[in-house]
Length: 229
Ligand code: MN
Image (cartoon, rainbow, N blue to C red; front, side, top):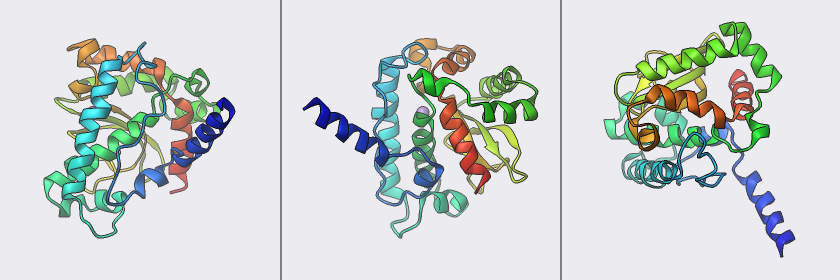
């Protein structure tokens, strides 16, 4: 029985491979993705209650509202985000909110193997930012200084260079409204709902803490994919 269950679990895990293509290609009606880890497994950095409310209430609300407001014709989420200026603000807020969170959950992991930064990515980061520490420090700085609610991102920009940027609300760099555009390879939610229960007003501590559950293997996979897009 256990054997059959693990076969089902293995088969299931292939069903939601974490690719930009799968996130970008979603169409109406969108669904709340399942988390690939249990909600207390990241507690060293993000507590169980925050994970449950953030995924089960906040993200679910973006999905439910996105399905109410997004165009029903067969446009992909990426096509909608790239032309989001043509839609009401509710489309930007909720389709953006869904994409951002679906992307973010993939970047967290309790699995120590996935937390190890692949050498390829480390070299890319060192060549662009000098060192991994300098890179993390710049993300923390832009995330902590983003006024109000928003996100901090690492993107591959139009020149295919790694660049750090921040956006407000549920905006992201895929949107035609973004000041700095590109393909996200890393994103961190800096809304208060992402950290307030454990860190209260100390957003900088949340940003430092999150590295201990960060999925660098996934960042590397997103980056390799982004370079081909
Ligand atoms: Mn959030």
